[in-house]
Amino acid sequence: MDKAEQNLLREFLPQLKTQSNLGKAWFIVLLLGLFIGLFGLYTQIVKGHIVTGMRDYVVWGVYIVNFIFFMGLSYAGALIAGSLHLMQTNWRKPIMRMAEILTVVSLMIGPLFIILCIGRLD
Image (tube, rainbow, N blue to C red; front, side, top):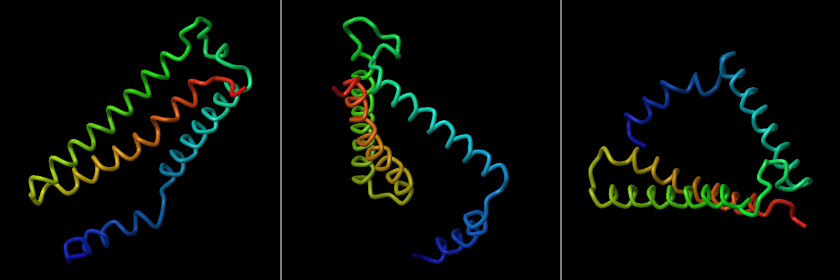
């Protein structure tokens, strides 16, 4: 780690150690959203696709489209990261890291839609 990175880290260290009331409120709102989503998943697993309003024979369509979207997003992140790696310029590192994170997160989220596509697991 060079001197500029150490100074930057030292500048943001107080913000990393303490949280404001706004930050705590956002954390509570996001945690509430997570619990609502988990409750919705539980309800779908217990009662099936009928709770989503998809009663016809193509209930899997929305989930498959989302799966394909996230897989395409991961390919795009890999393409951007690979292209920037070939450039060998200094400004590419932060963008390359974001593209790599985008790729990894998309590869983790995408298969979840296949699990959701199943509906009830029986």
